[in-house]
Image (cartoon, rainbow, N blue to C red; front, top):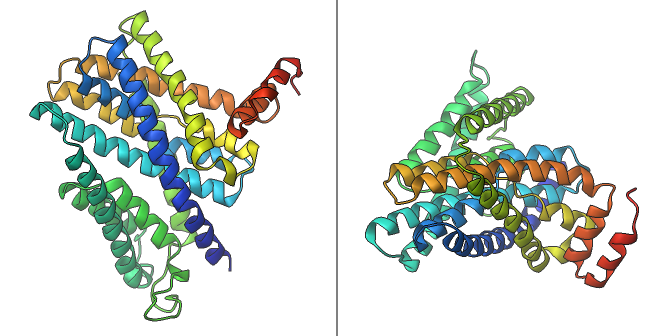
Length: 349
């Protein structure tokens, strides 16, 4: 019943999430990369590294925000999957560009192959690991103090996939989706639910993962605050400008890919859901560690973008519910540009 409906919603949102993730990521990466090359003393590859990092989004920040709003299940699934894919794209492309810097050039074929392999291998490990784990989970539940065993399995899979050179993040996501819906998954050859053998997580385990997620997000913000370096006013302004560019570029990406599949209000909400998170913070520190010229500059600008994107997202979301900001976004996403003239005549609700 409910689980089967959940799977249908996830399946419907998957293709839309892929299209939105790729359109939003590469559009932002290219435009912000060009801007970084023009505004900062950086070569093309370091500039594209900034663009790749700025193009990421953070699921850890987006999902709690969505849960506080009254949105459809499909939109919730879309944003969850899209932000995960976006993070993987950012990690894979950024690391590929850092490798290209060392080699002195960009190989598009290599980058594309690495992306495809990263997704496929990660999904196989995530699904396979979750299915095998669910087969023995019933016995694990009879043991005392066994709550951390699932966490240990996720960490082990994450580390294994990362060691192999693929995406541990997508593996963890695939594991979570599978273990969360394992009781309703049907194998084509069996033709019946697998509920008789595999089991999913208990309510206590689900609550534990929720609390652990909150704890990690808290430490992330502490880490971000410690890492921020306000080296100059110019760097701060450039970081804020890149944040503004990311929000502007998100609008056509949403309109082209998923604008017609959601209400104007939902499309407007999707268009502002681009806060940057832990992946961007970690990636920002790598260029300097690898000795890339301008690595410290990349780090400082990116940290400003992370902070400002979180602030802007947190401020705009409440405004979308009751002010002319909502009408502005809805008019642009829907393509009713002429209706923007009415915005100045509207009074905030």
